[in-house]
Structures are given as C-alpha cells and as structure tokens.
Image (cartoon, rainbow, N blue to C red):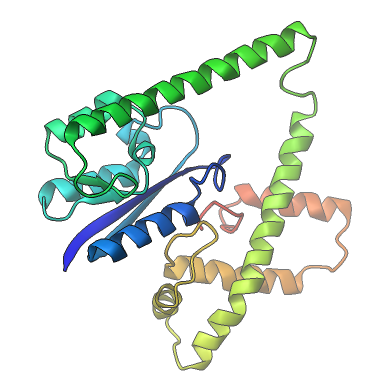
Length: 257
C-alpha cells in the first residue's frame, strides 16, 4: 500500500466556515486515500493566528511535513484543497521546482503541473480580491461614520476568555467518562490513555491527537471544577479568567488542545 502524510490548515476565526474546517478537510482526505488505496503515516496541522500564513516560519507543521516529504519522494503530503497548502503562486511553484511531492485531494493524483499553476494563480487572485473587498468595506463604513474597533475592547476580551474557559470545561466533562472507562479497563499510564483515545478516533478540542499532558489537563480541570464554588462571586469569576496567564493553568481552550 502506498503511504502519504496529511496536512491541514485552519484559521482561528474561520474554522468551520467555507468548508475549510478541520472536519471537512479530514473527511475530504479520508475519502481520497480510501479511493486511492493510500495509508496515512503522519498528520500535521497548523492553526493560523495572523497574516503571513505562507511563511514557513509561521507554519511550523507545514515545514515539518514538507521536510519529511523531501526526504522520501514516495511519501507525499496530501491536502484537501490547494489553498490549504498556500494561496501564493511563487510558493507552489517553488515546491514543484524543487520536486517536493504533494497531492491535492480535490484535484486528484494525476493533475497536470500546468493546471496546478492555474489553480494556484486563482487562489492567489481570490486572496487579493478578499483583501480588496475588506479594505473597501472598511473605507465605506468610515465614511458613514461607523466607529471601527469598538470602545469596549477589554470587556469583549474578558468575555472571550470566559467563553473559552466554559468551552474547555464542557469538553473536559464530555471526555472524562471515556478516560475513566479506559482506566477501568486496566490502563493506568497517562501516555497509554492518550494512545487509547487516539485509537478510538477521539480528537482533542482542536481535532488533534492526544498526549499524556493533555490527558492530565482534562483530569486536573475536572478536579478544579469539583472543588470550585457552584455560584462563584464576580471576583472569583475574574480570578478564574486570569488563570489563563498563570503557569499552573494550562487548560483554556486552544492553549494546548
């Protein structure tokens, strides 16, 4: 059976939109490898946090995937769509020129190199159009007197932290029974529990793979939740939110999962 690595890319503010969320990408790649008889031997995922997404320095998992592909031309990197790899023509052309093997599930395994250049050009043009439309919309909003940014930024940030903490707690509550079930079967090692979660196809909050540290986070969060007051005072809620910055608290959604 042929082998390959999969690469997925999402944006923190766009995940799940436009069919580019992690689940949609995984499903597209899974259908492709099943049809082509390919075994996925490694998975890499990047989450964008800002501009410059095509710079490998800001996409470390892509850099690792491509480095591995360079070492083994028989093990390409598979992406669901070309723009998940990059929206930059020069970047795509560079990979092709350096014979870095990659496959786009949407386009099939035998797409012509010329067509890859065309699709890359379209992706780059789409990015430029999106940027231009956004800039134009902001200019028009300013002309109408709309105040951009928002005066309650600190309040919005605080609310965002509270929502993320609540999501992390809910996720932990859903996963903990599975962890307890695995422990009941005789598995005690945190690393082995992580292996069992991955074997069951259960993803982390971000859809990634489990490690012993993440299992510890779930168990610790449950313990903290049980020991916390059921009706915390406003000051207590504030203190919980500030735990995001403390070394002892590792569990806000997205920090480690």
